[in-house]
Image (cartoon, rainbow, N blue to C red):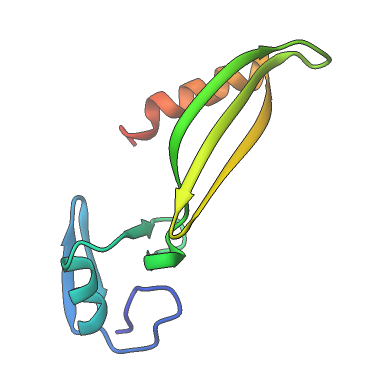
Length: 110
């Protein structure tokens, strides 16, 4: 079996336990995640991202009503990752804001 880390072609020799299950890792990546470095399991792609390949995380959120056509919310996110930070803005129409709130409520619960 191959290591679950994206773009790693080494043989997996270690079953690494995380909160909800386990993935197979090569010895180098097993040591890496055990040392406390950043990692992320993409359950859809069934791969593990490590280090600078880990997607940026949201470190700040703000929202304000947005007038216009369509109206809704102007959502601002500050993302931070390995040696990078960026601010992004999204116009979220009212009907999509309701969907987004539901997704966020259910997100941690599966």
